[in-house]
Length: 274
Image (cartoon, rainbow, N blue to C red; front, side, top):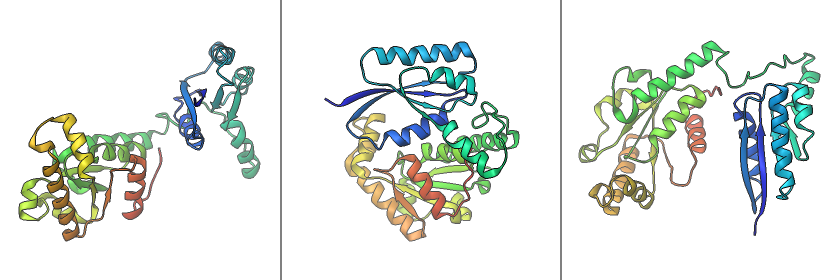
């Protein structure tokens, strides 16, 4: 039986930072079943007390010492939550003191700075990128396509849409995506709308067997989802991308984060994390 531990991500904001950092650490421990709980917007002593009580109650259930990843800024709230019997990993306390010493500047201790709309130009830029990616999903529009930072191409259901939205949300990139379809394979040419944007194209491919599984969920028993058709489309798409000199990646066993990082590196796009 795998060891089971409850993990709490505690934050005065959204909890996204605590989750990201904590999850990166948890992935290094195989054979442990982590039950993950996020407690966001802990901004008062009453909320901190409720948080402490919940963590303590988990410890008293006898499931092992809970693990707490915290990004609480307020020292009083941190001290109260830390009274629970748990293993604490306090990201704020760990890094801020070192940063203050190294920079010779005191931190502002402002709550909610990392994931908020306080940076108005940056927030507006990211929202603009998301709207652009949604408007240019699956070749829906050619309007202002020249503004795209990157245009993902590939067969239907190869991962273009989620990757485009991730690039927009995480990095503020205007990421469009465009499907390669049988008519393109018959001509063995790119769709005309993509030709002027060729330097910004990046391809996604996928194993035919995995593509069949995905398409079966959408249109079971159809020719669209047949393994023969999936093999044909993948082979033709890869041949077209090779012919046009388009860089591409096989998305079958890669996460969206890995795909996005590869695209940024190979197209030499400067990344701005929001």
